[in-house]
Length: 263
Image (tube, rainbow, N blue to C red):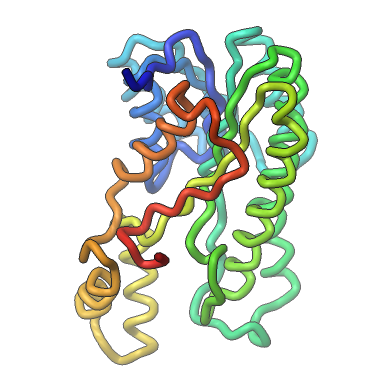
């Protein structure tokens, strides 16, 4: 029997307030996890906390700047104090896409620094802050949300794509180092997820290409083997699996969920 239960486990979730975040947080809580919701937008965190009350789990939140070492350190201390040996892991959804529609030579150094400060440095700081507790417990699972741009070269998003490549290397190395202590580290790499962010990007690209967002959406979906984009639930299901005992022997992997675009 496949065991997807997260009963008795507490998980830190970054970026739960926007995009696919609320759906992922709800899936974790539905399957029994207590959660510490982490992000900068307090209003969004409160909204998700209220919504997750229907699952009768312990749902807390902590305002955190993922580009700040001090802020992440305070959050990790709260997670350890709140959950003790129930603290089981991290689902790191938070990330910046940065400006789109620019060639590499049109980006600024500030664009580079901003994207790396959250997408890579933030992931490093989160793992560094939480891993010692997981290692002490001799169990744990960390899942970062990466992306298919970490598997190929991309046009008009070179720095963003570079952060996803860097995240893969960071996670794979962390998996080797933490594995002997029972802690797993994996990535889920979504393709396009139908939602406000993709719709905004399609609108921006359509304006550059002289077409419509609807035409680009149809073209994007047609380029997948399954002829459809992801829903939030597709990504949530992959993360649930990797956080659960069903994936007890899986670490250092980058699970692509994209309807069959990269095959």
